[in-house]
Amino acid sequence: MTKSAVTPTIDLGADGRHVGDLRVRWSDNSVPLGYHPVPILSLRNGAGPVVVLIAGTHGDEFEGPSAIMRVMGALQPDEIRGQIIAIPALNAPAVRQAARVSPLDGVNLNRAFPGNPMGGVTDQVAYYVETALLPMADAAVDLHSGGSASFFTPCTLPTRTADAALYARNLELAEVFGLPHIWVLGSFNDARSVNSAAERAGVPMIAAELGGCGGVDPVITDATEAGLMRVLRHVGVVQGQVEALPAPRKVEITSAEHSLYAPGEGVFDRRAQAGQDVKAGDIAGTLHYVLEPRRPSEVIAFAHDGMVLAHTNRGYVQRGDMLMMVVRDVD
Ligand SMILES: [Zn+2]
Image (tube, rainbow, N blue to C red; front, side, top):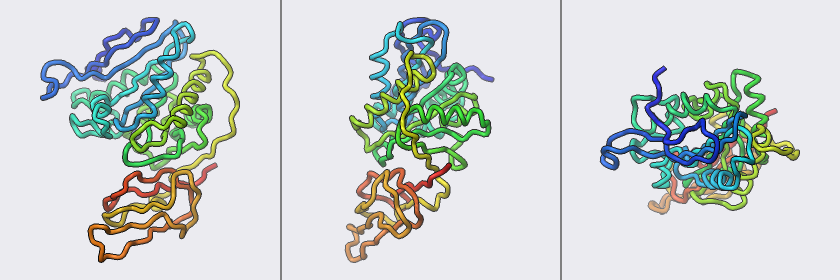
């Protein structure tokens, strides 16, 4: 396997608190001869479990980066056993611009795995995570949200892996995190995501969807910080009991046809929201053709029973935009 050309400026084997960069070498107009920095933080105290915390895989999702900075700021090396490696802005060029995908190459990092050591910035970062970072980990968490385009009811995302034992450990992490919903990633999952990279590395891992709308919700970010601390206690990096919580509700996308997409371009007058149970025929909203007002507005109804996991945050939608992501309960 080709070694990743991305190099950390800190020694990830050293005890104590270390803060540095992953250096991604790629010559362009913005950085002709230097490197593109991806900040990395390490807290280590001897041998023990290693947990990798990632956020900012998409650059317009800010609850996760906030929660990781809170946790890494609060914990001292002598309070832990093993190591926490945190990357709060994995797609750093996108985070700087509050954009979903990298402005350097237009690539969606969560669709770039397993990456490419000879590729552009996003491909190189994915390759480093897949081949160098995740193989070090005993558990990993990748924090997302709906970004500027949408809003998710807070949920954790375990992959239903082919390896049943790994799936059980993914589910355990999802339950321990403590959000009210678990969105199981089944056959509709994309193999180019961090979740799939963790499956290939055989590492227990969850992602999370933590609200959205391009900002930082204080209640959801508090829940995320508490969830990260519960995961750290569960894995044994931080000492202490993990308090029992009510069992989360498990949901899954069982058909792409359950969700609703904009049939035209216009203002979506939304009438339903993430977290809501819906029946076939319930009204999701009305599409108003405000730029062609002779055209009658169109009522958009749910075609199937289910729960709304996410809704669009856009007022003006384009044909094909997701309006409502609808999931079903699973056992
Ligand atoms: Zn995301």
